[in-house]
Every structure is written in structure tokens, then in C-alpha cells.
Image (cartoon, rainbow, N blue to C red; front, side, top):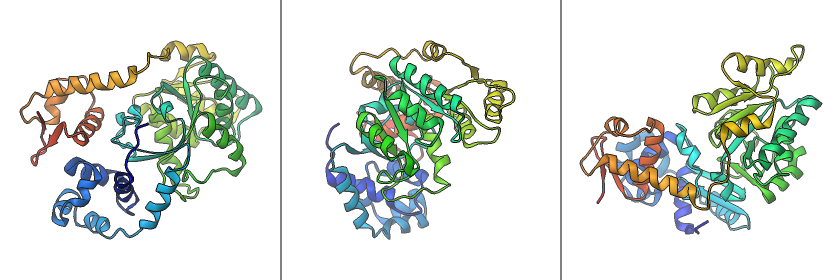
Length: 361
């Protein structure tokens, strides 16, 4: 991964560590000014015009340089990475969701972030058979070339990570705490294995404890990184079903394993199947659906480059609105917005005051 200067990372950290400044405001600032260094070089009135007076005051009042210094120290440690929206290593799949994180904290193999992936999720209080099934499917799918994404929780999540580590696809653990904290504590050893052989990823700053409200936010990244989500076991009302719903909203495939009609942990899977999820009882069903053959080296970057080139060609050189761009491409509004933001950060596209975009020669 290309080394980014500490000064640039400090600006990204200041943007994302400003309390009360949400993802939407961060995206609007990046769209209006470009990289964070330019955000902080802009005048107060210009920032207020982009995100409002309250957000501008929050940004100006930032006073936690110690947190920035701690995070840069963490990033200098072997295996630790800060991945920003402008980085080539940023997972392209996350650019397809409505609210991609501005900054990711990653321990381990950054290259896994752009591999074809499947999420495997299920009950924390999994049955012995459920945990065995999650591990078996993860092992076979990892050996078939898929990177397995899960949430490092007890039960099905932990089993999926264990199984995935036995194959070349490996695994990504998306956590709901800071990268320097592991929850639950019982999975400390597993987290170390994942960081050594796969990747541990979070959007939450260092020191963030296990807060209940952060785990549903974490779930959108689990599904967003993946081409599909496999639900192994789930009660009729569970956090696992939130991940499945998010996957459907994000245009991902949803797979579910049926179980006993007498088991409460099969109710959620049966509910998903009734709602249109694909019933699977063999890992080959998923492999044939997602076609995870390993692409040639550089194929992912080439695809992204081709998509950007096609978008620029569709824009021409005159000012154009996003609706008109959508008419001339096969891209969704969310994907278009994410790609246009990336092109702005690369100074290949400019956002005009009237909300239209113009290609820069």
C-alpha cells in the first residue's frame, strides 16, 4: 500500500474525529473542497455555506491533537493501516453503499478489502450444529476463493472466521469497537489470528468501547464489503436479520440455510426464505452463484479504472447534472455519487456551485 504522509493522515483524522460531524457532513465537505487539507484551508464562511454554521463551529473547535498523535503512532506499527476514501486500497464494494465510512482502521492484509467476499452471520448462542455448519461452509467457500466477512461475535461469527482461515480466501473481521479493543474478550486469540492471516477492520476511532448502538452500524459494513450474505442461524428477531435486511437494501444476494421447524434459531432463516432469500444446503450453490474465480493480478484496479473512464466519457466536458449522467450510464445513484466523489478527490471532476459536475481537462 502506498505510503500517505502523516500530514495528510492528520487532516483525515481531524475530519473524522470531530465530535458531532457525521458522515454526511464529511462527504459534503470533501465534495465541496476536495481532500481534507483543503477543507481546513477554507474560510469559516465557506465551510458554513457547505455544511451549516453548527458543523462549521464543531470543525473549528477541534482540540484533540493528542488523539491524532496516538492514532498516527498506531498506524506506524507493523500491520496497522489507515485507509481513506481517496486510497486505492479502499474497498470498492463500500463505495456502492449510501454511507461508506470516510476512514477505515485495518489490522492485517489490506489487499483482502478488494477481494470477492461473502458475509457469513448467525446467532451468537448458536447450536453446536449451527456453529459446525458455519465453520464448514466458511472453510469450503474460502477454499473456493471467497473471502469470508463476519463480525467476530461468539457463535456463528467466530466459527465462520475459524473455518475461513483454513482456506486461501481467508477472512475479514468487522468489529464494532476501536481497533485497539476486542469484543468479546473471549475472542482475543481469534482476533490475533485473523489480524495475522486476514484482516480486522473498523470505522470506529481507537479507544471506542463496545457500545450497543455501534453494532448495527458495523453490520452495514459487513454486508457492504460482500457480494452476498449467508445466514446460518437466526431467531425471528435478531441482529443477524438486520445484516440480511441491509444486504438486500444494498443490492447484495441473501442466502439462508433451512433448519428444524422446531428450533427457534431456524425461524429467522425460514422467514428470510419466505421473503425471497435463496435456500442453500451446499457451499457449491453459493460458489456457482457468485463465481469467485480469482481475477488476474490488477483486474480489480483495471475494472475500477474502466468504470471511471466510462463515467468521464459519458459526462463530456460541459457541466452536467447527476440525473443526466445516470441516464447515460448503467450506474445507480449511490454508485455514481461515490465515484464522482473519488474523481473530485483526484481533481478529475469539479462540483460546480449549482450542483452540477464538470470534467476537468
